Image 1 (cartoon, one colour):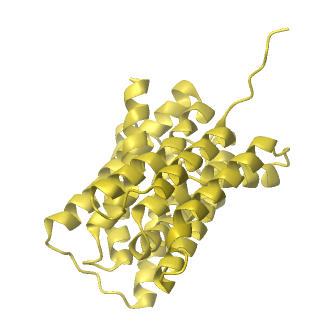
Image 2 (spheres, rainbow, N blue to C red; image 1 turned 30 degrees about the horizontal axis):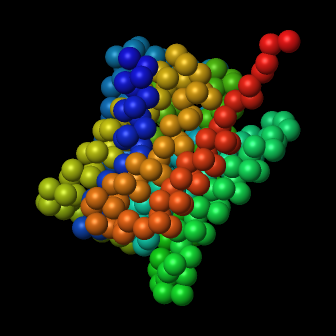
Length: 291
């Protein structure tokens, strides 16, 4: 069962930004993210009730739980949505894999732990992968494409902030399903405020592509994969569960080529390999030899 959950998470999250691209911009991205968050929240709330988990003030640090939700389910998602639309899903997936390097850096700062050399090596390979992919088109890249790259990178950094808060919540033994439910509700409030302030219309498109993308993101990416991931952390550990991030660039890159969004090239292949290698090195455990 652990293998099934691992592969499911890897594939679902690896195709996350492909689904964003398929969903498109028939509705404002803020509205699309709002619909996704509402569906995921309802599912987590139902699960909370089925498991009869009570939300007790004494057991929940609302500041860090809300911070986790706002970072991981609202701000980062919205930036990554825009990054995907302005650039390519393959590139955003590759940039997103850098969280395997950025999150340990934040953890070392917040919890005052020593940063291992493998993080520097993994980070260097990750950045090199982006440069290699972009290099052939460096003189023809549009300003919107560059903006997409910047938004994707900032979104990834904010995801790592959320991951750091999630790590803190886990250390304080806050029930993960409770944290996800409260976090998702907090994200909904913020997305509503952003939508209203920005003056975006809240409309419901009728195209099948839009709904396929929305339901994939809401049910599979935001609920099923998260639920599987929580069980994986419990069953095999957080470090082992995180290795799937290393495969995201390959899954997203292959799907992007298949749907005609990206062109298969030697630079893309090398970039994906370097991104995967960088993420793997950053996540790899030290091998301890028996004396």
